[in-house]
Length: 197
Image 1 (tube, rainbow, N blue to C red):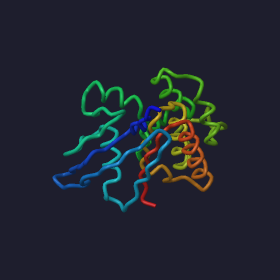
Image 2: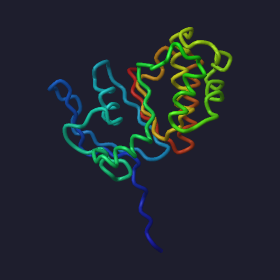
Image 3: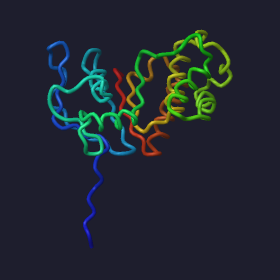
């Protein structure tokens, strides 16, 4: 009987370190995440959680070590381009276009992805369906966060990097966040979350 090798992790960090402003923030980090997996980064403000996510997103490079995606170093330009197309980044800066309607804010990103038909269902799931034709400038902070989450759903990329995703959400919003994360993982998606909680 042939021996089956376990699947490669989708994301693998080998001895990764990271500097910020000439100060070492992360030292010798090793981790792996498989399809359907999740990683929660916790720590106080300034502890390096966002720096870690930015490094995974390719906004900055590690000062040492390797980040591998499907066994390939993401620092290689052809690999990085393919890797980047797998990522969905949610940060504290919401990138909401205030002059657009709520629906247009999601559809704009969806069209950039060459996709269609997921915007309104995503807004409805996030409790914003009734506000779809309203200008985004009218949204509360919690509703803006829900709008960001609706974009994640409409764009539908397999790797989610979420920086403080529960900030400004009420209890119902947090439950929706937990639900969409669980559903994404059931489909084999990966979620990496940074939180101070």
